[in-house]
Length: 197
Image (cartoon, rainbow, N blue to C red; front, side, top):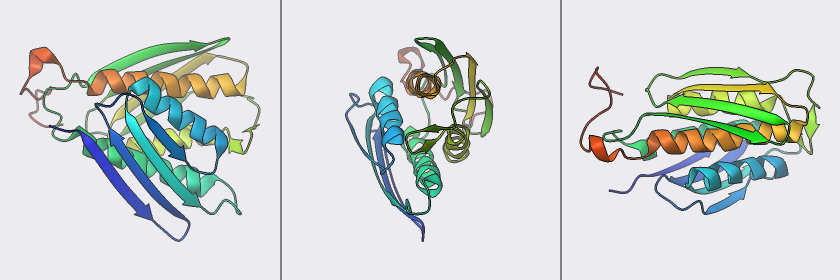
């Protein structure tokens, strides 16, 4: 059974195509027009071992907000679609990733209930290239809302804004990978006492 999600989302502000294969090898094709965001989505695919295609055209003449947000919404919807009925998965995943002086801790529950807890150091450099660092939380909010997962992301320390954001995406990738993988001991079992996820 393939676990693939494909979402096309078109508004007056953006046109987005996202395809994700949860059982891939980390092959990525990313193009949003925002270089650092492309780099982060590449981290998500490669470290999650998801085959990930993202093609976004947005109103970058205004700024990158709509492009980044709408891509995250489509990515969340595609991830949820790819999960299917969630039978036989681990459901929970966590990972701690260092990147030089920065550290990110990510824990996920593919619960069907969207909730985000996000903390990172204050007074970070405001921009990384054309990427507004305040968008990291908004990306996670948008992804969580559409993927319908509970996600806790904590960066207890870090100095370099690039490192702080990148270690979050790497840890997120690994946590999602662990949570969405099939559990060989739970084949045919939905990991929930409620009988629904």
